[in-house]
Length: 467
Image (cartoon, helix red, strand yellow):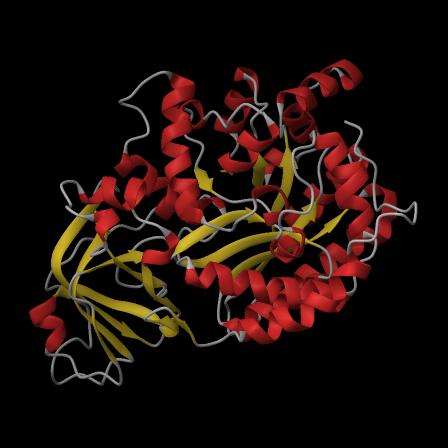
C-alpha cells in the first residue's frame, strides 16, 4: 500500500517496441479523450489520444495519429468517448448481492442480528459463487475492474473472478468465535490463491473487526501479515457508537486497539472509519501502510457520520472509494460513490470548494489503487501499468453540454454510460454487451435458492453484533 504513485501523461515517448515496425499490439484504442495524471499526480485530460496495449499492459498513451500507426490484433474506435483507468471498489462483500433490498430501514444492530447474520448461516458455497458472478457482472457493466472483497467461501469468489476476467484483492473473513481455525483458514486461503487467475488475484488476511476479533487474534494476524507480506483488510471505527463503546469497555478507540496489536505496522485497509477521532487520524498518518475505504451511500442509510476524508488526506492517509455490500448499499455502483463522496464531503465540511470533481477522480483512481495495495499496478493510464481501461460515452442528453469534463464525469455520468471494460488487455464488455458472464443463467439458478437462503426462523446466526 505504500508504493509510490506512478504518473505519466500522453506523448510520443512510448518506450521500446512502439511504432509501425514493432510487433503487433494486442489492442489499440484510438481517438479517445484520456484521463491521465500529470507529474504531480493531478488529474488531467489528453484530447485525441491513443492507448497501445501489449501483453496485458499499457505500452503507450500517445496521440491518436501515432496509435493508428501501430499494428494490432484488435482495435477500438473510441472517438467521442473518455478513456479512464478502471474503477476500484475498495471494500465490498460481493456475494451479498443476493440480499439486495432484503433488510431495509432498520438500525445497524437489528440489521446484523435479526436479518443478515441469521441468513448468512444458511449460505452454501454455490450461493456464494452465484452471488459473486452476479456482482462481477454488475461491476464490469459499471466500469469496475478491481474489487477488494471480504467474505466467506472465498475460493468460490476467486473462481468467479477467474471466470469473469476481473481483478480482485480477496480475503477470507473470520471471527474469533471460530477459534484459531478461522484465522488459520484465512491464512491458508491467502497463501494458496495468491497470484491466481493469471496474476489478477491478490490475497489478504481478513479479520472481521476489533469488536468480533480478540486482541490476541489481531496481534497474531499482524505477525502473520508481516511474515508473509500480506495486506490486512478489516472493518474499524465503522461509526461513532463503536468508537464510544470501545472507549467505555477497553479505554481505547478501535484504531488504538489496532495500533496496540501491531496492525498499524502492516499494510492495512480499514473499511469505513466514520467514527475516527482526531487522535486516530494522527495514528493512521504515522502508519506506513494504512488506507481507508469510504462507502457513503450506506452511511446515509444507517444515519451515520461520514468518513473524514479531508482530515485523512491532510494526514497523508490514502482514501479510496467503495460501495460495501449490496445488502446495505443496494448497489455496487462506484460512480454513485464518486458523486456522493463529493456532495457529502462538501456538506460535512460546509465548504463548497472542498472535494472538487478532480479531487474525487483522484480518489477514485490512484488513491483507490493505493488503498488496496495495487498502487504500482493499476489506477492510472501510464506505460507499464496493467491495461485496465474503461471507455465512457458522454453523448447522452444527461451529460451534454460538457463545460468541465471532470464535473461531467463525477456529477452527471452514470454507470450505464460505460461502453467498454478492459482488464489486463482483455475486453470483458464491448458496447454494453457482457462477454464473460451469462447474467440470465446466473439469475435463473439463484432465484429458486432464495427462499431457503433467506430463512431466518431457525434461531441461528453466525455472530452477534455487540460492540
